Length: 556
Ligand SMILES: [Zn+2]
Image (cartoon, rainbow, N blue to C red; front, top):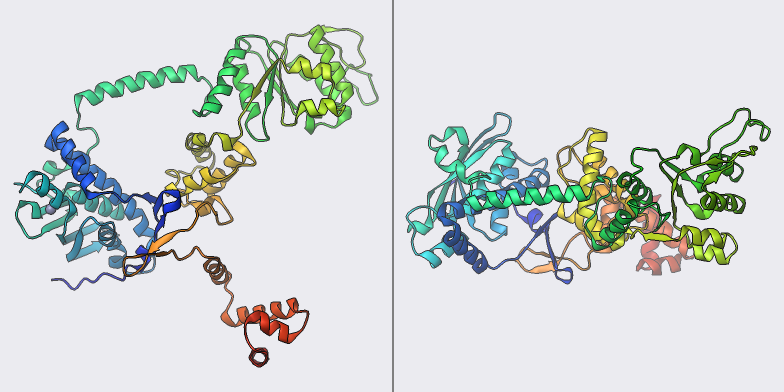
């Protein structure tokens, strides 16, 4: 056969992690499943019987293609610095590791720069050939569709151009093995017979009909959710949203409750946009951000000469918001004197500027928000109870992000679009593992924290590559319990890179500390901890006193 040899696959095997406790298997950052070949066989049979052999082939080919292109992403980063051939055979090696088929290279000629590719491989133990023969008997034509899809998908993603693989012999037709040949699609004279199986829209009529129904449903959903800024589909979110929607049609004062960072101002803006006041101003003010002695003039305005420094008359926020909505964030921080004035404004519907004896009618809907317990503030005498009752007519609790984790993918998608436009960068999303890490986080800072992480991840991830866990979190995430990998004998073993010691070693290596430096640092540390007592230090290091002496001398 050929002289092409595979490198050891340790680097690939140690990317496989089993976390049975969490119901997860990983191949690096991609979630995998251990599936019965019999289930695949059943799927194949169902597909062939229900949509016909061509559609079944198309679906399975595309399924393999998707898997292959994912593995190519991995190949690009796993054997950096090794020969192009070693980098390329990550694909065949993973195809074997994933249990689909045994792959032996016959010939392989790859030139990334020229875009040249020619490859021939022998397949043995093809999973698809086996299940096909078991279910349908010997076939007339090759049947390893998913596997050929994988080879095409992997190679196309690796090469950055469409490389079409064809099965020129198949074990299912009575051969001992399958044989596959791949080259750029335009070098195949009969490419047109194969490419339709890679296309998304070979059409089953009913699918079209369904998809137009989906469009109609989506359009009606968009009508009912006019605020693109508010994103979510979880029960908690929808409940808060429906309360806001009902309030929008009325003039009721709304009190938004929730932790810092849950997006209270967005809800206030949404309420405004859905209300009859939408064409009038929305004015927001954060009571905690203003010095106490300025709050009243900011809210109610000031008349020239009202106090030293008031050289011109100025409108307050209430007047600016006339006809529209005034959003008072962190209302719990409002000083008592201002609380009294606010209460009067709410009762009378009119304001008085500071230093003015005229009253002015105003028509403003108030939306207040707080992240403190106002009832407790009332008890403590920091908040007027009459104002509290006036504000608490229609409280809406906005759930913290940890109670709406299922919204994270939706939120992330919209943030990626927003930050992508902002930073002129495109990333295709998050890896499975990164998404999983987000769902495992407790989110003390809520949506705002998520925004910060996504923005950071977007900046750190390479252009056109998905955001990985390490782009999001500076600290390693402990969101998984014990992990297992596969050792050289194919058995489950504790995964590398997960023990404390592994983490420590990695940190030491990354910091560029030499072995000698590390030894000296450890000894100094032990001596210090032992209060200068060398015997104590030796005990801590698990060596004898003479051994310690020897090592200390070595330094000099
Ligand atoms: Zn085959």
